[in-house]
Length: 295
Image 1: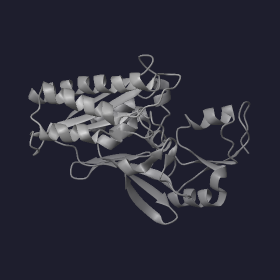
Image 2: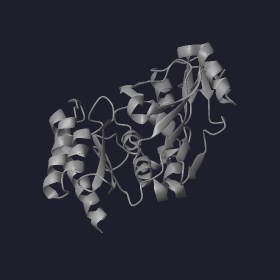
Image 3: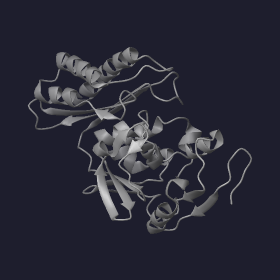
Image 4: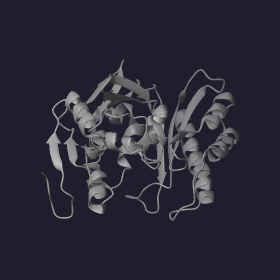
C-alpha cells in the first residue's frame, strides 16, 4: 500500500510486460490507473478526482521508453517517452520537426521532463499539444489489449473530451509515424494566455511539401483547442491543393480553417475570439510555410 500526505492510499505495481498490464487492467477495471509520467494522474489524486485502488507503472514494459527510426519504415515512439526526450532526440529533430515543436510547447521544461506523449494523447484533451501534430503527421497508435495488438489511425482515436477508442483492458504502447516527406516544411503555433506554460486557446500544426496536386503542393493543417477533438481542416487543405498557391488562396484557406473550428466560450476566451485566432494563426503559418517552400 502506497500512502503519502495529500494523496489517497493505493496499491502500486510496476509491470514487466504488456501482457501483465492487460491482465491487471482486466482484473481491476476502472479501479486501476496507469502511470507513465504522472503529470495528470497525481494532480487528479491530490484533488480527489481520481481514487484508484491500484496504480500500474508501465515504464518498465519493453519498448515503451524507446524511440526507433528507419528511413524506410518511419518513426516509432514508445508511449512512455517524455516530451523533452522527443525534443532532444536527433532523429525527431532532423526528420519530424513538427513533433519536436509540438512536444516542446507542452507546459514548462520541468513538466516536459515527466510528461509523456502517450499520456498527452490518451488524456484526449482538446488542447493537448501533440494531438494536432499526430493528425497532420498521419500517425497511428499501437494498442495492446486482451485480443492482442491493433493499430488505430490518429484521426480515429479521439471520440471527444477525455474519450478515446481504447477498450476495456487496452492501453497505448507506441505511436508510429510514416516516413517523412522530403523537403517538407513544419510549423506549429500555439496561443495561450501567457507566453509559455499555459494550455492553448488555439493550436495550429502545419506540414507543407511539394506534391502532385493541381497546385503542386500539399498542405496539411491541424487544429487544437477549437473543437471537441483535434481536427484536420480538410476543406482548407483541399482548397490549397486545387488552387495555385498565393496570397489569395492562403487567405481563403485560413477562412476555411476558421469555419472548420467549433470552440466554446469559457472562462479563458470567447468562441468568437478563438475562431478569429484560428484564422489569424493559420494565415501566419501558411504564409511562413509558403515562403519557406519558395526558398
